[in-house]
Structure formats: structure tokens, C-alpha cells
Amino acid sequence: KIQWETNKKLNLGLQTYLLNNRLGIDFNYYINNVSNLLTLMSFKNPIGGINNYWSNGGELKNYGFELTVTGKPVVAKDWQLELGGSIGHYKNEVKKLPNGNYTTSIYGDNNILTSVGNPVGLFYGYQTAGIFATNVEASEAGKDGYLYMLDNAGNANYFKAGDVHFVDQNGDGVINEADKIVIGDPNPDIYGNIFANLSWKQLTLHLGFNYSIGGDVYNYQRSVLNSGSTFYNQQVAEIGRWRYEGQKSDLPRVAYGDPLCNNRFSDRWIEDGSYLRLKTVRLDYQFPIPGTWTWLQGLSLWAQANNLITFTRYMGSDPEFSVGDGVLYQGIDAGQLAQGRSFQFGLKINL
Image (cartoon, one colour):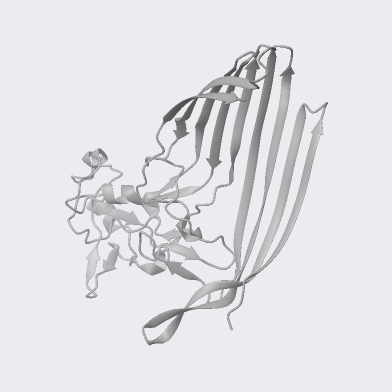
């Protein structure tokens, strides 16, 4: 009885040019409601080797806007200047799920939350409050003393100096799944582009920027290279790990196998992925064409540089990335190669 998803869309747009075409405005607003959303269900008693099946039990709403403004403040015989920029915002909201909220494990343990009333793919994990500098600090963190966690055998392991202070959300003294909360949203608040074109006679300079503000990033690569629990190579930052009673540090003690799960999915690995990137710089020179050269319509020489500089506080290799095409893979940095600088030169001939 499975059927196609149903999309109901509304798009409103405005495009206008003012002041003798010196000012341009392009605005678009959209709403997209999806019913009969395909969702993956699980059999309670799998048979025939089939564990999952598809159902039309969900509903999703997407809405947002994009605004582009361009202007030409200088229009003269030899000089021309054009400036422009765009800003966009979107939001998706889960309206209905057949079996209620659920979590998905992607480079972590049940770390991606899909829940009614929230965007798809929120980061779901533990909140932290620093590193226990002393055993006295650790002894005051729990309900009746030390915080603890239960291992697979049901034994209590107590957090002590040098361990991460995970926030006990329900105050029962034990750190477990009940203490997980939303710790990040990979969807940016705004995103867009900024550009400038400056022309002087036959010479034109183009600058193109892109930006994203407000999106959170799960730095999975850093969670491996700062784990302090394996024999893998570690980042130099591990030199500053906790090593003695009373030491203030942002990194927990080294413990092979991570018995207290200090490196579990938490806000330690969630970073601000905002950035501003100089994406493109291009210089063009248009050669004058003699009137007698009717066979040649145009001749230009150009040079272009890409990804010259990026302004960001993100500690990974590149804040502009995608680990996968799926909506649940947003904002996860699993160690993709950064976009490198590139330089191009060319000659364009129009016959």
C-alpha cells in the first residue's frame, strides 16, 4: 500500500530594477509541505531476513527565503563598479512521525535526533561542564557524591579527577542515555554570497565571497585525534591534557580504552561552523579589436584564483564540506580533504 510522497508548494517572488537599473532586487519565499513522507519502519519480529520496511507515515514542512540585492554605484566612461550580495534562510520542521521520535547512529552512538516539532538531524548527546581538576570537584558532582556510569556488566565506574564532567540532567547521580539533550543544529541561521565587479577601461576585477553563519559542526575527526584512549596518532593539543591533581585543562586524562567514555558524543565535539570565504578572484583584460579585423569578435586574457582565504573559528580543515547527500549527514566532518587553492589562466577567442 506504499505510495508516492505528496508535495504542496507555494512560491512567492519579486524581481525589480530601480534607479535606471542601478539597483536590482530579487526576493523569493517558499513553503513546501510534504505529506505521506517515506519513513523507514522496523519489524518487531523480523522474518525472512528482512528487518525494515517503508511506510508513508510522516509529514515534513520546509520554508525559507532568499534575497539578492545588486547595485551600480559607479557608472562612468572608464570606471564601473557593481556590488551585490545575497542572504538566505531556511527551516525544516518534522510535523509527524509514525512511531514517534527516534535517533540514528552516524559516526556516534544514537547521536542524530529526528523528532516532531524540530528540524531533521539535530545533534543529540551529552552536555559537559569542563574537566574535573581535583577529586574533591568530582566528589561534589553527583547526587550523593561522585557521578558514575554503569558498564556492560552493571558495575559502577566513578568519575574522578581528570575525567569529563558530564551534566547530570535528571539529577539521579548516574550518567546514561536519560541525560542526553539536543547539543547542536547543523542548519545555518543565514547563508549567501557577496560579490564585487570593478572595471577600468578593458580591465575587470571580480571578487566573490560566500558565507554561512550559525550552523553547528560535529568534528568527528577531532574526536578521534583528541581521544587520548588509543594508540592512534594524536594532535599536538594532547600535550595540554590533564595530568595531575589540581591542573586546569580542557582535555581529559589519558586512559586506554576510555573506560569512563570521556570521548562519548557530547558538546566537546560540536563547534561553530560559521565562515566567510574568498571563493573567487578573477582578472580579465579585453584586448581592443581593430575595426578591420571582422573575423575576430573578441579576445581576452584572464587569470583566476579560487579558495584563497577563509575566516572561521572552526578547528577542522574546512568548514565548507558535506560528508554525504542525506539530510541526516548535515554538519558532520569525518575528515574530508579541504578545498585547496587553485590558480587558472586562460585566453578566450571569439570568432
